[in-house]
Amino acid sequence: MIRVLVVDDDFMVARLHSKLVERVEGFTVVGEARSGAEALSAVRELRPDLVLLDIYLPDMSGLDVLRELRGAAAPLDVDALVVTAARDAETVRGALRGGAVHYIIKPFDAPVLRERLEHYARRHQELASIATPGQEDVDRVFGAASAPGRPQAPGEGPGPAALPVAAVAGGAPAAAVRLPKGVTEQTAGLVRQTLAGHPEGMSATECAALSGLSRVSARRYLEFFVSAGWARVSLRYGSTGRPERRYHWVSGSA
Image (cartoon, rainbow, N blue to C red):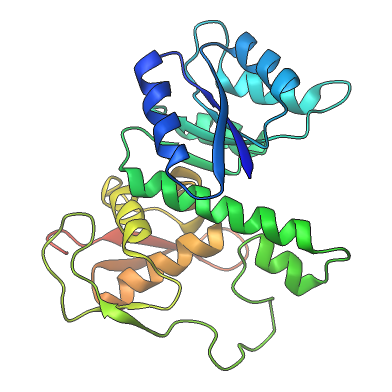
């Protein structure tokens, strides 16, 4: 059972998040905290596996809590999933640097939290079962579809899903388009919302930071949108290296 501490200064929000967590098989809430100081004390006392961490706390930022957890003389063995209304890039970068496993922007639909928790549980189980990981094990845990330079084996990579897409994030029906293997409608909606909110376009790295996905996963969804005609790609050329692929949501798409 994965033990979870819920940290949010709003009593009702914390209670709601606790109920959502308890509905996910394999998870249990061991406590709630209303401030950064309470969170740090509860982590030391309750020893949870995962903290659902808000950023806006009355005494300190959730990023400060992350730094305390990681920078203690004896760093506490706990993961953090950030759940916050903060959507500025600097906060997202701070969460990534602090080792957050995911980043969910409020308000969100319950399936989004469920999916993040289930993904965390799979990774948690994989890590527990690996004694001496090889590169493929590491790639799988970190979300890489395949190792660089290794050809995909039969059955890997995109493939037709069993069911067609009904809609993406409340958009127009798209019954003729089928979800590729490894693509879920809930995450497609999250990436669509992220991309559509940036009409100037964004890279896969930027999309990953704002949506809380890995770069590999974000790019998989973005490329799916391009293949479906819901997004287009432009190239940004720098002084050196390969051009950066910039993704743009096509206005009026699903």
